[in-house]
Amino acid sequence: MFRNKIAIIFLIISFASCNKEELILSNFDKKYNVSKDCIDTTLIPPSNIPNSQDLTRYIIRNSNDYCYAIKSVPTQGFIEWNSNICVDKFRNKYSLAFMNYADTTNWMQYTKYANVREIIVCDINLYDTSKQLIYSDHLFNRDSTLKRGAYFKNSSDGDVSDASWEIDTNYINYVKVTCIDTLKKILEGEFEFHFRLTEQSSMFPLVKYSEQAFFKCGHYRVKYEN
Image (tube, rainbow, N blue to C red; front, side, top):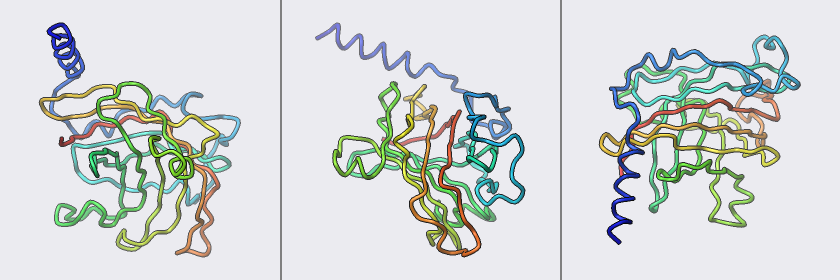
């Protein structure tokens, strides 16, 4: 029993040994390593399609919680994708919510969903350092022990659904915790998601989103609560 306690203490200390400097917004300016690991060059064209609705760049709030990835869309191209991020807890289960916005003016006066445009959500175990595989709602409904994820686009003030995508289980999808500072309660990690369209744009008849959207080489850093 004593040895087990020592092992647990050592694990917590070592796992909390990530860089503990204060979060700074320059993290958003981090250069992307755009390689074949991030983009399937057999699917993504060498030049982006002009005015692609799938490659619209939205803005983020001036927050210390951040995420960045490469969003690539077959036949369309790719962009460097940023979002804010938060940890939600419901019935003792945790999830990550990645969000970016159409407007961030006076954002501290509003809820986190005000003027949101893109939302990615996925389940997560904060204390599991392995690759946590993410599945579709369809498979989750068969087996509730699985972790699930989804991707949405909203419009208006952020409260109107525009389109939705589910996890594409033809690919490996995961979220990973690479570092946890248990003193400051800061979580860092990586992710890779592949989505397929389930509901086409309902707000804009002339907008037709692509069937697939990939988020690869993703990194995040977020503050959490127990």
